[in-house]
Each structure stands twice: as structure tokens, then as C-alpha cells.
Image (cartoon, rainbow, N blue to C red; front, side, top):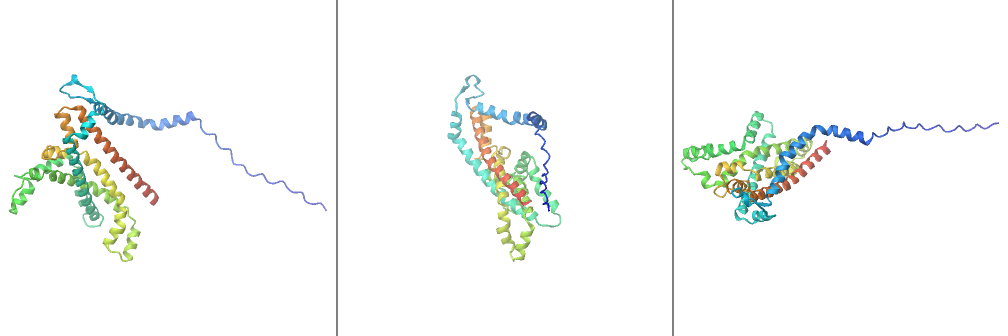
Length: 317
């Protein structure tokens, strides 16, 4: 009896050979073809932002007064030392810090209250939202002129008209409380910006968590403290950082309402005075470089917060 011969093992199906990678030169050509439409925008961005900053940085290294152009000379970092040691510039830095902190905090608190209001459903919510956003859409100079003449004017302003009708006198708002007058105008204009950021954060909450907390017996304050506020932490940080970047660079309100007088001259206005009135191009450029470096530092933190928000949203999706 013959034993059956073993059959040879079946050949494993071999995968089709992978296509050879395209040559490096072809990949480079395709990459440049996809990036080519962006080159005009990149060139324009460099020409508009980077070249002026490089020119400012070069001018900041010179003792340059436009009234004496022939006496221009290279001084290195002397202008930066003057910026950091000059008393008027130090005062303007303190004013800028006080103005920025007060405006950002006040607009953040008011923006949070308005965002909580608009997060609820009620009749006419779209109209109310549009009206609340309107101050942020105004041109900054127009907003400052509105507050200076329509509201703060001691003779025909709205505030003094109401106070006179109530028999409470007519104070001169700008001369008696100049910094508060500038802060009020800026808070009115930047509160809608904070409201939009925080409203986006409120509308990204998980409704299941809110409903589960209500079923477990949590009241409105407990939901806000233990669920809403921790969820809004990133959005609050983003509002503080972006608001600080914009308010630090604000020039329109100070120039229009007080013309930098009565202790309201912030750093941008002092730079304007140094450049256009004192004609000290080197010192003004050095102060401008300091402002740009500070703004870059704040913007770096803002970009980190934005990227973390994007990562959280992608992870949640």
C-alpha cells in the first residue's frame, strides 16, 4: 500500500510590488507648484511688516534728530538705555500697564455677563446680539469722538444732561477723571470682543454634562462654578492675552479724548510725541522696538492658548 505523497505547500500570495517613489525632483516641483500662489502674499507680508521693523531696528541704533540730520551718528544700545531710564517713558509704561489691566479685566467681566445672557434663549436674542456687537465694529477714532463729545462734554453731553435733570451738577469728566474717561471708552468698545470669545466657549459646552448635573440636583451657581468656569478657563486666558495685545498698542482713545495730557500718555502716545514733536527718531524707534518685543511675547502665549483650544476641540470631536 503506497503512502500518499505530501503536496508541496501552496505559494503564499505575494503583494503586488509597491510603486517606486517619485523622483525627488518631481516632488520638489509639485511642492513649489502648490506653494507658488502663496508667494505674492508672503512677499507682500515681508515688505509691509518685516522690512519696516528692520528699518526701525537700524534707526534705533543711531542718535538721529531730524532737526540736525548732519549730526547723525551710531550709538549702539544707548537709545534703549534712555528708554528704560527716562522718567517720562517710565511713567508712560506704568500708565500703559494700568490702562491695559483695568480695561481688560473690566471688559472681561462684562463680556462674561453678556455672554451668559446671550447663551439663553429669549425673544429678540438676535437683535440684542447685533446691538451688543456694534461698538466693536466702530472705527476707534469714531468711538473715541462719540465718548468725548456726545457723552463726556460738560455742556451738552448725555451724562451731564441726565445729571442736570436729576439736579446733581455737571462735572467735567475728562479734566476731573481723565484716565477713567479713557478706560470707560475702551471698555465700551472691547467688551463685545470678550463677549464673542466667551460666548463661543459657552456654546461649546457638552449639553449632556449640564443636563446630568441638573438631574443630580445641582443649582445654577454650582453648574457655573464647577462646570462652566473650568470649561471657560482657556477662553478667558485667550481673551486676556488678545485684549492685552490690542490695548497695549492703543493710540486712538488717548490721542482723541485727552491728547495724552493729565497723566494719560501711554507708551504708543509717548512714542508719537518723541517721533513727531521732539523729532528724536532714534529714541522713538528704540521705544517702538520695545513695544514690539513685548507684544511678541504676549502673542506667543496667545498662540499657545489657541493651539491648545484647537487640540481640545479635535480631541472632543
